[in-house]
Image (tube, rainbow, N blue to C red; front, side, top):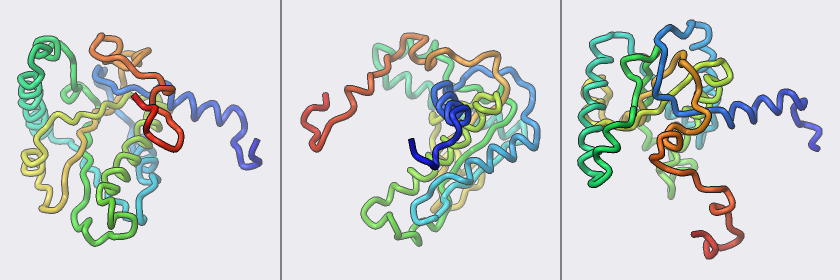
Length: 216
């Protein structure tokens, strides 16, 4: 074992948070105390970022009218997605895909503007800014689970319409609507597995050595 390893109890807690993290859609209202929210955002801000560009921007939505407008945008895209799913449209419409009106806190995460200034690590892979933001969201997610709060990542929205609604400047881009707060209970499996929408693939099917050849 590495001499830099965490004590066993601390290590196990990290793996437990990873294993029990869920993309939550059912919320129980309530609130997230200010000190907890500050810790969660601090965890997000400690994420790795390519070239230390820190491209994440967090918008806390506190106006009920703005929250309602975001919900309307998501519902519009939910219906459009159903229309694109063909024979699974009716099944999709029975799924709960967001908790925007029920969650304690609503956050919008965006890629910041002027990202073109950052070349380090992005010259041939410009999407590493999105990868960095995704790391920040995952940090927040795991910290929320450790604090006992659920979080759900909603991606059903038109980014241009959401940017217009929130006054996000040209060059910046919303990438996630995050529902955060107390939940009735955490799903024992991912919700899409519990509802029969999809099945997880085993890790063994997603690993190969040296070449792609043996991946299915």
